[in-house]
Structures are given as C-alpha cells and as structure tokens.
Length: 261
Ligand SMILES: [Zn+2]
Image (cartoon, rainbow, N blue to C red; front, side, top):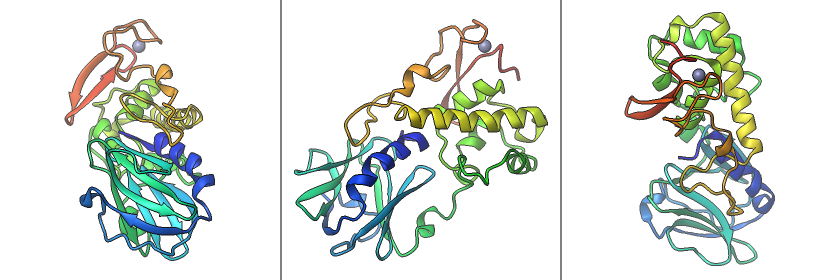
C-alpha cells in the first residue's frame, strides 16, 4: 500500500504536469471510485499538496482529494489505460487517471480539504512535529506502538513498511506500550521516523508489489529496508535472524535482539 513517501513521490512527479491545467471532464469507469460527485469541468488545478497518504489537488474553487489505498496508481496519458477507475480530462487532450487493480482507491471533490483529511494526526515531516510534541502524544496512550503508529488519527502517513523500519532503527519492540518509552527512546523513534521517510522520498518510495510513480518507475528504497519482508534473514545490526509476527492483523518484522520487549 502506498504510504507517505510513495504519495509524495507521486505529488512531486505530477505537480509540474498538472499545476495550471484546466479540467475539462471527469469519468468514472468504476463508479465507486468517486466518493463524491466529480463535477470538475472548467476548474483549474492551482497546486498539488499532500496530507498523510492523501494527495490534494487545490483547484481554483475547492479541492480534489485522492487516496490510492492498496494498489492505486496515478498517470497522465492520452488514452485511458485498462483498470482505470476514475479519470480527469485535461486541456490539451490528456487524461489524469487513477488506475487501480483492486479498485479501493477513491477521489473526493470537496469545498475544503479538511472534510476528507481533517481527522488526520500530525504530519511527521512538519517542523511542528517535534520530539517534545511526539512525547506528549505518546504519554497518555496505553496502546501498543505498532497499531498506534499505523493509526492515521494519531500520526499521518505511516503504514506497515515505515513503521517496522522506524521501530527497528530506533531499537524498540513493536509491542511496547506507548507510554512506557523513555525520553531517549522517544527521541530515537522521532528521529528515525523522519530520517527514514525522507530517505524513502529521495529514493522514489518503496515498491513491494506494484507501486510505481507516474513515470512508471518502481521505488528504489526497497533495497534499503532493514527488516520489512526480511524475516529469516540476518539483522544488519547484530546478525540475529529477523522474525515476523502478526500484530493487529498486520505482518510485523523485527529483530528480537535489537528490539527487546
Ligand atoms: Zn538486530
């Protein structure tokens, strides 16, 4: 599933191709891809933003919000590709398409982006997301860290890949209770969440199965994953075999030596 770095990769690749363009039509070969009616004819795309895993297109009036969910991809092309679920026609005879094998991706057209993304927790790469703020967020929570970090209302943008990688880099077990972290552990986790997200953006995201940016290229961060989908291999830090368990229905990868419970 595309997480923050993959959506940011899409935003960066699409922005120069979409900003300033006028939308001339919208079609939904898979009607459920439209979470709201899409009435875009004549609207101009002002800029592209991102909030968590949501791509936000600022229009001259209102917003288009897109979530890729499991397998959505975004492309700008002359003809609709197979498995297009929603598409926006651009001036100059191109289409901005949501192509989606599993069809869970959604598009909303709303007056205010907050109607869709208002529930999200802080943006992890924002300067407002400080270690002190993270500490204050964790302090009242008795949840286990893995499901808490996956909870978009708690912190926006992280999914299974980057939660497992951040916890391993910070040497914290995924089943630790949030309010038991020491100050040093909170600082480490805060630092690694941010450095890993930034590094993944630099590499164009991570491709596990089928993520590709709008240019069709897979993300290059996969080769830098230290634990995700590496169970059975040796931990790069200590040589212990990486384990996989299921936490909150999600496959969870960790080093039992570096990440003690
Ligand atoms: Zn280890």
